[in-house]
Image (cartoon, rainbow, N blue to C red; front, top):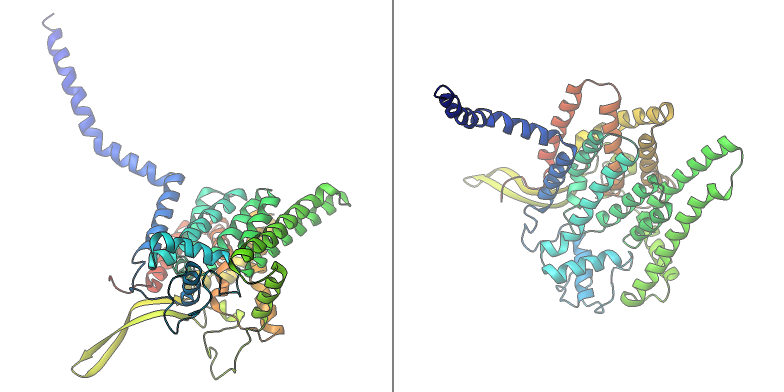
Length: 445
């Protein structure tokens, strides 16, 4: 009995000591497990993307960035708020959208945000932030719905999230992110086989801006490729083969025409949606280039082939600090620099990435590679045609919808070409250096 007592008394000590000795190891293992869990990584990536979109959102105070001068003032008119004298749409009829060259929905969303959060940076820009986050989730869903891995999806989303052009347009009050989000959702729905919903989502994009038409073009190319594959298998096409096309087009037309009719009946002077569509198309066609001066970038406009090299960057907002020694100016450096430009590392991989993606789609029948090529072509080549066949003015930010396809193509190159892992690590490191170099705030406010 006495011999058993020490053993029983010592056992609690052993039980108490074991957890204290293994606690650091357990915490390290838990941390390692969390950081390799795909769900945790996606959540951390989205949180980081949200933070860089929200930080210093209202700086500089009361300053409108780039085309916010049009859309914010249009929202003010819709709300019946004062528009500063001399600003766009000052004196416009209250309650009617003065920015008639675009559909009303985007400005209405901005007006709703401003009514809730006020006439300030948060109110102006929150819709773009939400749309930017939706676009990231849509890209992740596109990659996964194509049968690719979570890690490849995370890599693609990371490139989209921190590309400079995507970041800037996700945190300023313009229509570009508001149209990109629904058409990317439409692409995801199409890859899932939900063609009616895909057409409806693309129609919602049309109620933001007519450039959603290129998202529809991508859907139609995807449908055409599916019909071609069905014809090769069966040597005929039946109603079942044509049903997805009919569903997508019908829902697109109903949402576009019906939605525009409802919006115009309340917020526009147009009597029917056809007249409004005609006006918007004519307005776009009349945006011709001015007299071209010397140099490759005579103004803010640029040719589509220049975008491929990040040429003709646009300055959206720049605040400089002048450094003097006595009366002599020794340096002028920006403290805030919003630029219309892509991450130079991402755009620099365009040709190699799309060449590899083309091979992957042709030889390996990769759905994701095929989507990347179709999406990029549908959202880029029409501008090339416009530039070659007319004097239509184009700008570098028109390349924005191509960036998700480029990000996917680059992720495929890094993960599916057999390159060593250190190449991916090195590429990501240099890409992040580009993020820092192009980040709009050059110093902590």
